[in-house]
Length: 317
Image (cartoon, rainbow, N blue to C red; front, side, top):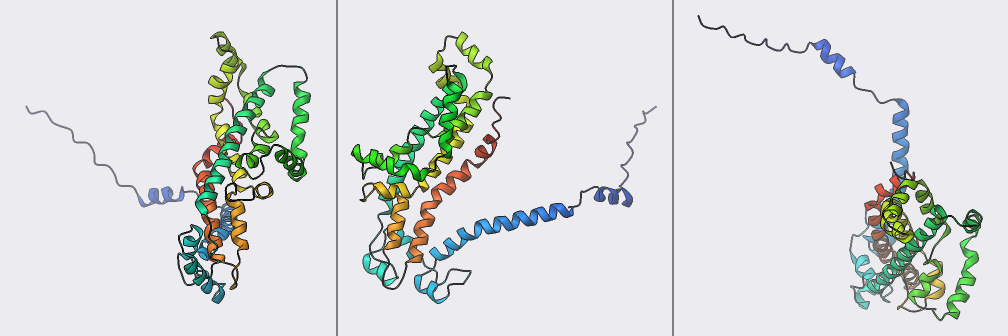
């Protein structure tokens, strides 16, 4: 007698009512969410509009800008502004396109900005981290009082320190040098020390005690244990410090007088001052501004997630 094989029952198709219930289960956007997205879209539009207008002006010719200044698209599109900003045009071509013809040694100014920003960021992060470790983990008499006095430096406007710093740099013989530009902010700042101290205070004492049992000293604990653990806030502070030093204008303007020490922000102002008879070279100026801002925009976009995650000072979990 042959064994009977049982066939599995065929799956029943979903009824229209079940499909309707499943479709209704999807959350509908509420009025508050729609308003929130609309507000965020408006803020994003207002934020990005200046960058778009800079790009539109850089891709336009000076003649087209004068003829149609309100056009949302590039007027008489051309890449001459970028060529003048990068020094790729001759004097005759620059004057013919509405430029001053004076030229802009863009790559030298870019290198000066990179050197100054790198020196400030590297030294400031190192010394600020050491000071923050001393304020957070070491016990010594008057620590909290001294930290309060040090933190009071946040209330001193930066413009009050310009003249004393200028006198100091002049007496050191560092006027018109890259080191003279970087020196006033190259060691530490109250904000950087406070920022890193908050993280070091959240590190459990057990981590430091375990390193002491393994034979590590205070210096070894700082460089081999705590500093690697603080990689996220250190990177965040480094990006913020680099952007701040890159955008600094007034102090480099005071102490740099030649192309050998002139940074990019000061060079843009000089490029703006080279006004031809036909008017300001808006196309070349906006092209140079866009090129100068592009490295910082790229740097911030690359480290944006780390910056946001470290602001909360999560410490060790």
